[in-house]
Image 1 (cartoon, rainbow, N blue to C red):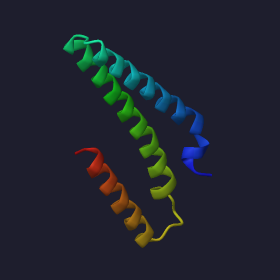
Image 2 (tube, rainbow, N blue to C red):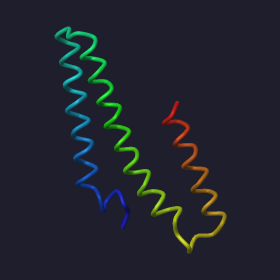
Image 3 (cartoon, helix red, strand yellow):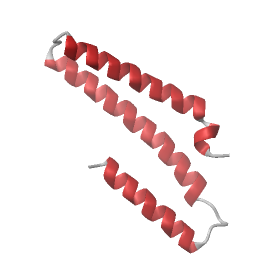
Length: 91
């Protein structure tokens, strides 16, 4: 069973929290809130997104790279894929 399915409820809770934070940011922008509170909301969303990324990343590493029964080529392919994803995330 995939780690994203196994921990689906936990991951969806994080996504819904991010959605709520994003909606709050949208409302704050619409009503012309102070820029400090806007920046604080953006920082909170970024932190929540980073937490979600870490949760899925950890599961991915455990499930796809930390196995004894995969070939060296498969491990290298998974590693290359993961590096590409991290590079795009960290841009």
